[in-house]
Image 1 (cartoon, rainbow, N blue to C red):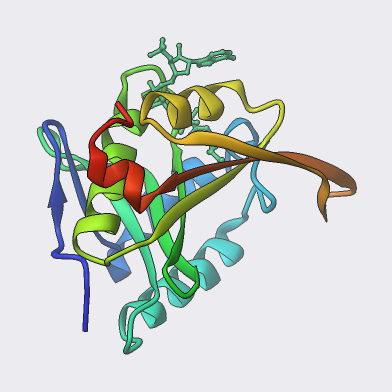
Image 2: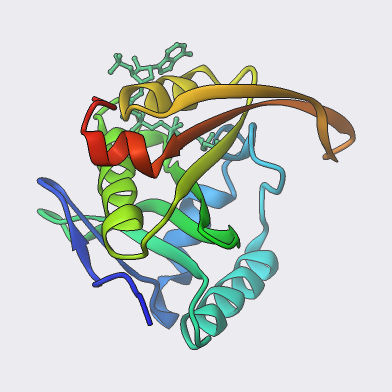
Length: 185
Ligand SMILES: CC(C)(COP(=O)(O)OP(=O)(O)OC[C@H]1O[C@@H](n2cnc3c(N)ncnc32)[C@H](O)[C@@H]1OP(=O)(O)O)[C@@H](O)C(=O)NCCC(=O)NCCS
């Protein structure tokens, strides 16, 4: 059975499983409306954060494990700066996502962690396709997906209704054959 060899390490970040003691760190960024502006959920209050953490801890015990929702830790300071996830949504297809506290935007962290997750998804989980959907107005995230070599594939009009509005989203994809050819970056 395939699994991610955790923790994953990049030049500046450690991607590790969340711990029961991470609640306050999660609260620091998911209660911020700037962070959740383009996310289908949130901002989360303390109670919702506790439920979310419970859910994540339960997903770590699943076998086979189809969901890797991971803490993003700045290695030098051992500080949780956000979260990222790679989740199996259909056979061979993984969905990639990330969010960071606003104080840590603009440092290249998302690009760095998304690159590592992509690599691990293909190498360790045997992904055939990694996909990500992003609100059409989320310029920073679109830029991250383009920088890591994902390719625009479609636009979903009225993809989802959440937080009292319809969401138009771009679909970005990286196929295994492109990753194997090494031409995505
Ligand atoms: C999206 C997010 C993770 C990006 O994190 P980050 O660490 O700042 O990203 P990076 O620094 O790696 O790269 C951001 C890129 O977007 C660019 N960018 C940022 N804001 C932008 C904007 N409003 N318009 C256009 N480009 C923008 C940056 O200049 C940078 O590109 P560059 O390297 O070519 O200059 C962060 O903004 C975030 O957590 N947002 C809230 C949660 C979220 O929306 N998650 C994604 C859901 S799909």
